[in-house]
Image 1 (tube, rainbow, N blue to C red):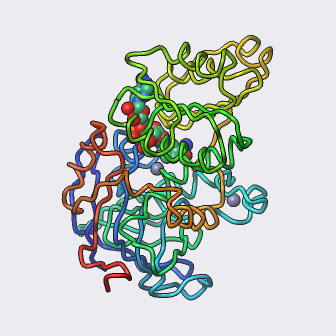
Image 2 (cartoon, rainbow, N blue to C red):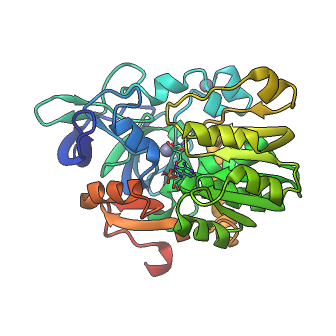
Length: 375
Ligand SMILES: NC(=O)c1ccc[n+]([C@@H]2O[C@H](COP(=O)([O-])OP(=O)(O)OC[C@H]3O[C@@H](n4cnc5c(N)ncnc54)[C@H](O)[C@@H]3O)[C@@H](O)[C@H]2O)c1
Ligand SMILES: [Zn+2]
Ligand SMILES: [Zn+2]
């Protein structure tokens, strides 16, 4: 089958819209016609060689679309279903069986090496050159072959153009709070970096009942958005020292929880410093950067912890419909953070996201799609 996809041919190159050939569907696969896809900062990291997926590749992992065809052993989906795409997992390792698919023993193999489990490719160029996929599917494409574990069914009344980013950025931010930090109602949290991930963490903190929610960033425009979405305090760390300011806000105690989405080493250290005794910090940025710490003084004697949280550490098939419900109730207004682009403008969308001008770009692959209410 002929499709169109945004290919990255080698490290750091722009996306090129190319005609590719999609492989024959295997019995356990599903053919998805993509309606839209969010762009995540992790795509940018991977595009610049900061990951394991070889080149050439098709990136994107925040897709939303409609099922066109299902393989004959697929049980849970049928043509016409509306779906969000997220990461793949095996379903049978101890962590998958105990409800932690983001900690799947095969996570790296299923999501990060560009090929199917049997080593075959789902995408080829017209001259036969194989092209790698991402997260077992790829979403910067008009069609993709995906595994059942990648798919989350959503109601027919949901606008598919909007909800792809629930598959990664918004899932990660909210899940880091809900499943990772598990804050008690009335507790305090500081979120460093108010991009898609940080703002989702903040919205989730509000839903969980945190009463002090401190947003830290270096852009006033993003901090204003944070304030509108429920931050009780905002700090521009270019103008104010966040350590002093957070001390002041918390009467010298510090916050019980913190999240770092910046991946900047001194900021990650600050996110640890501002914790109260017994506090927990979650660094979630995939920046590849290290931090220095002294376990005795920074962790043990102050009973602090640092936790790693991948993709929000929940079950996407449960968390994403829950986020849709919160969105419909007006409690998770992520639609305020998005800007739509035509698929062909993918390089401009990436630029606007890197510059900080746009929080969550969404590419539209199917301009003819109409949500149920306007059909
Ligand atoms: N752990 C996971 O599973 C997972 C999943 C998705 C994304 N991520 C990662 O999460 C990170 C955040 O993603 P995003 O889409 O929100 O990115 P983003 O770039 O939109 O957000 C980062 C924010 O940090 C702010 N920032 C940068 N330097 C700062 C500094 N020195 N002090 C204060 N603020 C600063 C920026 O202004 C920006 O608002 C990325 O590294 C991404 O790769 C991780
Ligand atoms: Zn598993
Ligand atoms: Zn992502």
